[in-house]
Length: 84
Image (cartoon, rainbow, N blue to C red; front, side, top):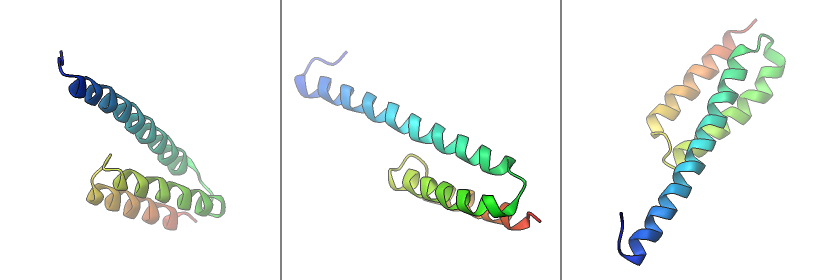
């Protein structure tokens, strides 16, 4: 375990960040899952904008890589546009 005051603080901070990142990541995954399960295109467009914003925020916070964010967004847009 850490012995220095600054190192103990760093451990506390990293634990907080980890929990926050897990929360945002899980929330975004659930939103993606909900979006993919929708069948009508009209309601999906509004939901798509919210999910794309969530993905961008994850990439900005370095929770996911920017290329993974781009791939996720691209796949979601293709999937929603394919709905009839």
